[in-house]
Length: 408
Image 1 (spheres, rainbow, N blue to C red):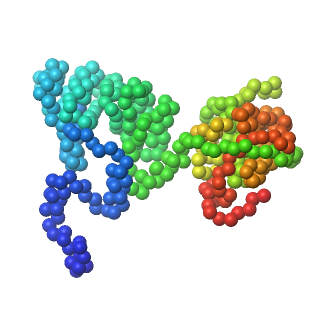
Image 2: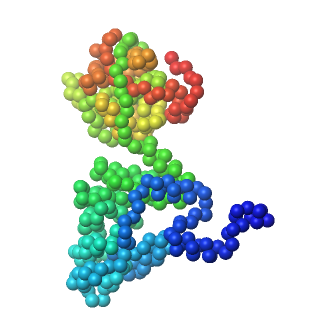
Image 3: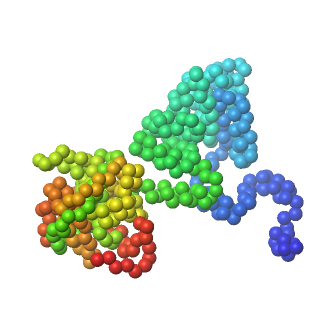
């Protein structure tokens, strides 16, 4: 009765409406969140070109399943031209399928597969290729996949072979085409986005729900590289602070000169503490390490979040930041906490004051506005160092919150 009194009463026979939607290419969604997610996706994606998709497979059964999936998702299949079919007849056995889906037969090798793929890619009616390769003793999947770099973009979808082959394809595709890869979860996405440092151009997340997709995207953003604004601060006080527990953060990266981590006693002002990359007469350089300071200190662990130094452990993430502000994710391999004599350094930048407690040692350095390392033992009133002002004075569980807090 509620439906009868509402515009929902026009539903009538659902089959008729479903048929009309299919004929007019209207996409139908059963949930409001799916509809809005689709609207956002279409607003940011290019429209498909004329033509259709081509399926190239070395297994007839999976080719049929892919064709069914295309029909179910209203993806039109391309019709090969006469010239394309004639070219395929020259390289494929007589019992092969020369239509779409193209079955190059299970005994194919990489040369036959890649030749067929190149022929299909040249067909003007083809705007996308679904390259389905089942690993066999004769087919080198990675070699065949490299042939796909003739296309504008390549989507990698695989079950058993993933990161290492993705690296090979990224290397082969360099400067030739974009490479996309299917990611099953956050770990998968991170591996693919960082393969060969460059990573794939994009990942396709196979999330089970819109909520899972949003959560994965949120976590990916916390790993993203970016740039932070660093500014000059003037040192106003340097004094001995006695013994304290200090933390050395050892990462899985080789850090560069002028690069370090952002650390401080106040969330509103963080000091750029230099890595142990410099040659010195006291000890061998340890370019993976930052002697970051007292265990109570904040450390910037993502573009938006902080951690306490005492919380870090093997497997944690922190940001390595260059003196120009470039930030990149660093995985913590080890944190060493030991009692050492400490120095308190106080500085001011644009009316904001902050402090940091650092080990009193020649090899512990801050960074000057020019990118040079400045030993804490050489600091004095008036010295200039680089700092970052996150813009948030209050933190809860490492995240900025809009509330009053006084740190002093």
